Picture 1 (tube, helix red, strand yellow):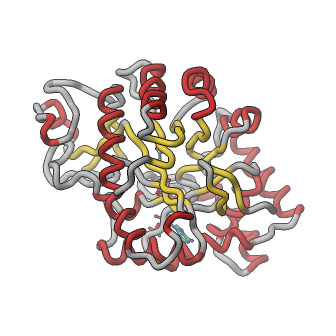
Picture 2 (cartoon, protein in one colour):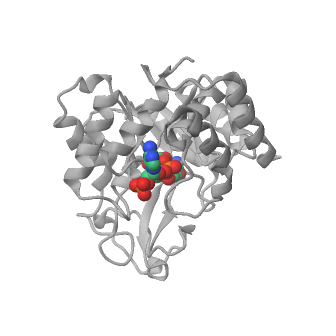
Length: 330
Ligand SMILES: NC(=O)c1ccc[n+]([C@@H]2O[C@H](COP(=O)([O-])OP(=O)(O)OC[C@H]3O[C@@H](n4cnc5c(N)ncnc54)[C@H](OP(=O)(O)O)[C@@H]3O)[C@@H](O)[C@H]2O)c1
């Protein structure tokens, strides 16, 4: 199977590394996080996925200036202290979301000097994982997206961002305005390529009509327990866009249906490897322009996951796994 793919001008393995779990709740200490990224890069990972919003607020609200940029600075520092070819590594980040603590506190005024970009008294969409004191808040006003993107470049220590995604639609902002912000960032040379995330097919079409060829990737949830019921991957195939799957192992914050992974456990038994490795190899088989970006919280996990690029599943195994997942999505 073709394990390399083209993304944002890089020809790289289609198994990258999500760094969210190294930067938000449950994160390991910073040294372990850096060692985990180094282990991924040493194994062959050449795509690191981060976001402006991968940090934890240290106090109620969206956090203080010192909280911001934790995840992006982690990626920057891991790359700076790595002994390999930095210029071979694609770093993608996202704009338009922020973290929150204690949801009701959001409406308290926060000044722009804290870098939080929220107008006093403004209510925005909140997403919260069950059992977590932290949540996510969409803020994709064009001015916020543009300002945060420029901050991301500072956090990452680069002049131009390789690939910037809109983190997700914001119900308070027309989607065309979010796409317009990405287009402006492209035109101003702040970013080389644009992507969009958490989108349906209609939003993909709208984004293409506004951003044009600068739009190269869609990052949507895809795994055996969340098999893309809206068939956005098929739409990306028709359009020739890369499809990047988030939470490719089901995620680690929200509960998911473990039974979806039983067929993968069975196939893992044939190969004497983890079922996670089978899941990732199966995902890579679904589309030649699919990239999968598992998180890891220690070096062993990313080493185990990256070995999916070497795992060959038989036609019978692939047919059985495809049938099990397709049956779930109806
Ligand atoms: N665009 C978006 O809105 C969005 C949303 C979510 C995620 N993402 C991106 O997608 C990336 C991945 O998603 P995710 O962090 O939600 O979850 P995930 O990759 O589906 O699951 C990761 C969890 O699985 C465990 N794991 C990983 N590799 C393993 C292995 N080889 N064997 C056994 N267990 C393994 C780890 O948990 P333990 O450490 O507990 O074992 C890890 O935290 C994120 O880092 C982020 O870049 C994007």
